[in-house]
Amino acid sequence: MSTNLDKPDNNNNKGLKDSWAIRPCHIYKEEYSDCTSIKARFHQYFIHGESVDCSQWLTDYQNCTKYEDSNGNNIAAGEAIVQSEEERRNIRLKAHYANTTWKKRQSPPDDWAKPLPEWLVKKNQNTYLEVKANEIAGAIPEQVDSSYCSIM
Image (cartoon, rainbow, N blue to C red):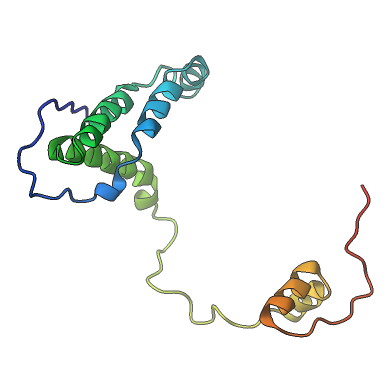
């Protein structure tokens, strides 16, 4: 996963696909600093039993500064960051895709907009949220005898 690229790509007319995935460079530096801090190392040892390799954050920071310093012309450095972000996203979503407990929906249920049950409508009566919702909807608010003031 570690890719450090020193030479800029001379093919300036080629755009970088998925450049939206590149974070601001200071984020990569902060992530590296956080990953290598004493607190993070203690947490890593507690959770994983060993220290985690933080070198990818530093590599991404170096590639990001190269990409930014070249005004986006160092396509190779930009692609390395995008690839690293994609791998990070795939690792994060691995459990989601491997989950076979729940059936994934293709569309919302047919009755997703059905009216609320009577007991929930009664519970919502004269609440602050109902009054504000009526104000936003333009309905004339009903006179409420209760006060919204609370003394702590």
